[in-house]
Each structure stands twice: as C-alpha cells, then as structure tokens.
Length: 204
Picture 1 (cartoon, rainbow, N blue to C red):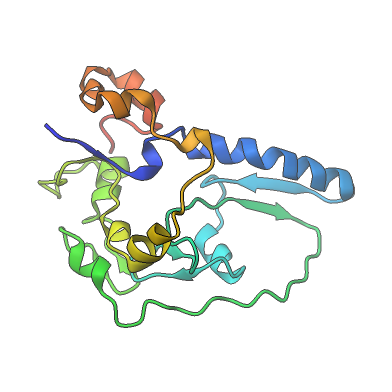
Picture 2 (picture 1 turned 60 degrees about the horizontal axis):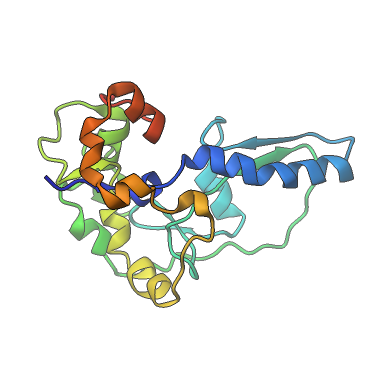
C-alpha cells in the first residue's frame, strides 16, 4: 500500500516552526517600539491571512485558491503579526498571472475546483484533515492533505522547480521514518498519529 503525504506534513508542525522563527522578530519589534503591541497568528486568529498576504503584495490568488508568488510558486507558509503600530507601505499588489491556464482545475480528481473557488466538501485535503465524512469514497492514496492542484501548477512545476526552490529549514525536511519506511505509519496508534501530524486520526 502506497501513502501520499502533503509536503507540509512530512516535516515538523509548521505552526510551531513559524512561531519559533518569528519570536526574534517580535522581540526586536517590541524592543524598538515599546509603546506598541505585537501579536503573531498562524491559522490561530480570526483574520483572513491569505487575503492580507495578497494585499501586502506577497502573491495573487490562484485558480486553485492558493496564494502564488511569481518567484517561488505556492509551496510556502504565511504567518501574520498584528500590531497597533501605524505602518505605511507603497507595496503594489501582484496582478493575477494565471491567465487561461486551468491545469489545477483539470487535475483535481474529485472536481473540487472552479476558477478561484473550492468546494471543501469535495476537497481531498479538507476530507483528510478536517471533515472525515464518507462523501469522498476515494482519497487517491492521500493520507494527510493533498498537493495535486499545486503539483501541476506551472508556477511550481516549471518556474520554482527550475530555480531549485527548496526549504532551508531543517524542521521542514522529510522526517526520517517517513523517508526510510513510510509504511511504519500503520503502526502508530491514535495518540501517536495526532502527535506527529497535529490532526486527528479520524477527523470529523
């Protein structure tokens, strides 16, 4: 039996990694601006992180609904730092560069995508991470998440790949036991699975 894991799931929990690496920045900001407040969020605050990132000029919303950066594609994480410090920027938003491409829509095996829209009820990633219903009879080998709509995207498959874009953080490298013996995941009990992947073994 062959399992597939989303690229974000093969390393350490990105929530913890981003919090750890943002701490020095937050401390530096607090030291420089002691009369202002700073709070980090990683999928933990009721704010539209992808929308804010797009407005900040970090990419455009792709037809697969992911944020796409013209130089590194869409395989990256974002975190926000909220503050009451007045900030003025001249950053120009990046215009949509998907054009007539429909690679992500055509590749989705469950038909979850329409241009710039996603039906979470049909999404394999949503199904394996949060939903857990029986609406999708086949997850096509994906055990944790799904990368199909990103793998086929030319901004990842061609541009980022040719540039050799890779993570420089050890925390995001493939965990040894997944690299050497991925079938060992079958031996994990429910508590071990949740500890390793930060999601319930039986979502929903």
